[in-house]
Length: 568
Image 1 (tube, one colour):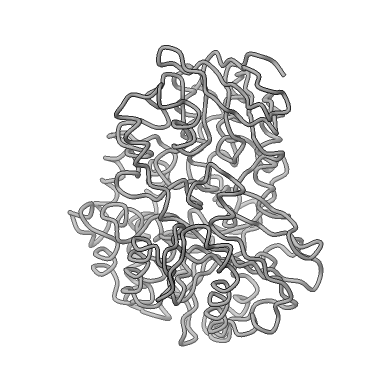
Image 2: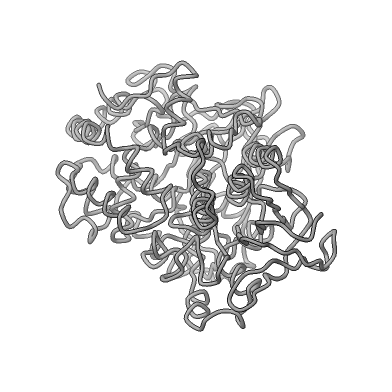
């Protein structure tokens, strides 16, 4: 290991690896320092149950095909094999019906909606006709362009032109917009579930209305998919790309300090427990932190190096609001939803063998206010609120379990700092160890109302709590999966806090991947950080750096014999 690099990246998560990969491909001397023995934190695949069963403990809806890095960092070349089922996200209802999105053919999504509401399906088709030649532009400005007035104005222009969209949409929630556009409560809850799964709460003004637009075209744009072999193949491919282009990765190397001199980041100091000891490493051009805001600014930069207003803003950063409890089952047969009989008859006879991602349980638009109150009170939702995303891994990729075994995962939305469960008082986060199995039981009971064979086919269950998430990754405080909720004061140009200017920060030459939106496998945080650093260092103008959002997925569909279409 050298003592000097052009760029140092703290944290080998997927967005840190993504940013580092771009820097290396631009010809810079880059080193990533990761505290664990393995890169890809929060995108893990491990055997924690029966031998040969791969458990994706965190990231599960892999959306990398949607992103520019999928092509620009050549992830397929470096081992990433995406498995995208024809049918993607669906929501079963207690009356045996469902709504589903198709992952390449928007007309099939509309046909699914028409079985619930013909009027709403026609509205959806009208939206598609309007967005067809704008969807790439919208998504690229939303997720792969650093927040700026020109980009926001372009997004606002597109949103304002949507048929029947109110002119004051930015002062509305998703509830307002959905009530204006659609008549079916089933469709509304289908959309709200998907928004929450992406970290965009429908009850927040502006965030909710923009989030609704984002999720209207789920499937055609980002979609729930998996990697052959499990989620961890995504960081593996990012790692291989980085190494190929000359980058270095040092694992078991926790960082204890960012060196700041005269308001400028100069390098890092490794922790004593590092395999290299408390060594000082200099960055001549930039330091990038892939940690969340409190670890970056409070722990590594240090309060003594922060302007008072930054110290105050970081102290008030909110992590709780995107927190999940994981149930993971191994079954001896595929999960069988009651609604499959209806979907196979009315929608597509192969649906039950092709759908991958689902949510269930919230069937009344009014149910979502219960989640908001549970967050505020630290109350465990009972009945559970399961809108975090649920996945049928082996339906898409049988290699994730031995022959004859199938895996299913559900994510229930919960507070981290749990203080009550009905009339029962709890003692905060440490109570998760006491009630994990008991609460997992009621999630399972709710799932059984929609898929009864979860009770007879399960041969193993593993429960992963929000406290476990923080234990495994101390950067993910309060059990967050997203880096912190997208409240108005932590969204878009205000993320991670107003005035930060992320991915740039108030510390010169220090960048942070906490950009714009919830952390995800869209790789938008790593991409946007790479853009800012490359612009500042004068290396952004590369002949290969020209891919836009969605384009990689459209080309992936073509290579795999599918036609991506919005028009019909």
